[in-house]
Length: 102
Image 1 (cartoon, one colour):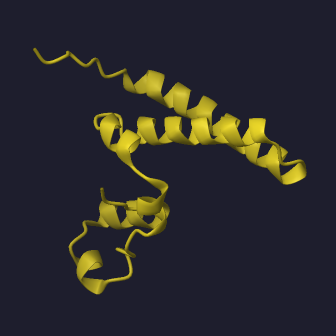
Image 2: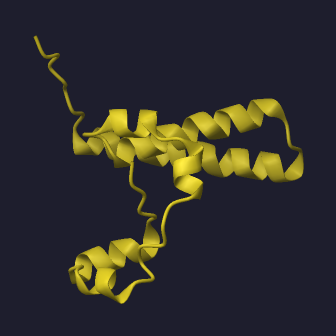
């Protein structure tokens, strides 16, 4: 039988996102001042949580994503055909977010 998945409420996700963003900002400051393995680990975990929140319905996709896939992603937004296919809202999102495919 399929496992029932409960998706958190939006308000809870917003609170959690804000908390995770604070952790990310703090760890980036710490790493710039004094790099250490503990801060790298906390930053990596917080970044993964941030991806989970953004992609809340497809967590398995984030779990399976390799760093290589992200680093070698194609430049989607540079093509005129891609931009023409987007709505105004999607164009705004494309300015602020990175699109990657698995």
